Image (cartoon, rainbow, N blue to C red; front, top):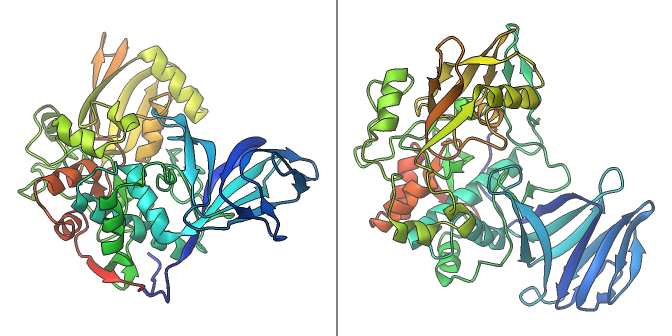
Length: 449
């Protein structure tokens, strides 16, 4: 990974893309905001609309401009509210009304659209991320651990911003495989987006917990470091019992601290490894004792936001798809007609059991696809929970009527397992121990005052 000198003179400010493309949006200004000319806009509801010549603003104050930049009169009291989609393209996608602090920018985008950007200090951003990814009632050491990894991930992305980004374009191989991975899609106009593609950032709606504010303050400026670089500290909701290698989800770059870890008190990876089909099948149906196998409602209610709480079967899950439905999905998602799908054959797995490459066998042709997210997308209207699954069939072996997927975990599984970390914190494990568990070969350093 790109070497980064872990040192800043002061706390950075960052820009967050709240809405990447819109033709119109309603924004409620609460408290004073000044535009770039020094004019103070009256509080109230505004309607912002894209025009050929720029942007139209109508409300208590009305004007037209090519772009808009509003700074708060009072950093603590001035805020703005708008509706935004969260969980875009995932099974929990929904619209939420969200309130933000910091500055507001509205800039022209493409084809008569505009983008909405929030400029805010890094530590206020981190406090929001913790309460957006998990709940503000989460145990203190989970909040501390999440503050460190969210800060680390963000600063690592900013340090690598000048390097080429993979935008999900197919990486064709000589044998005709389709291998795609979706990493840092080069947000050229802001630092990070506000949704699951980067980190969830839902403003100050749930950022009232004193324990979260304390966790951010106590860890202020602290990041994970490996070999002189700030760590690209990935995380997912539930690893399913074993975390995954970076290369299963993204590029073939070896990342020493993003490696498979057994998510249990014993700390040993399963043997035989979960790359073997029989071992994975037994592991899914007879899971060992691991932190993220949590069925305690008192813990889950405390750490999961309501929209995540609706997902009940995240540790072990089952999906049944007719052969016709698999054929429809793969044709639509991949743009390739293989004919009726006859088999789903694992080709390559990571050590958590997650598929890195999967062969689709059709009546007309066969095709190998990857990586893990592309597999999850190809077999679901939105996404499968993970690519750690084994396949059973219903009906004739040569021409199945349906495919039954038995799976483990929720998300890519790389780095920290949020459910596992929550259970560790509830059992009295400190945040430094939690971080050492999920990110081996790393250390904690403070990089700004």
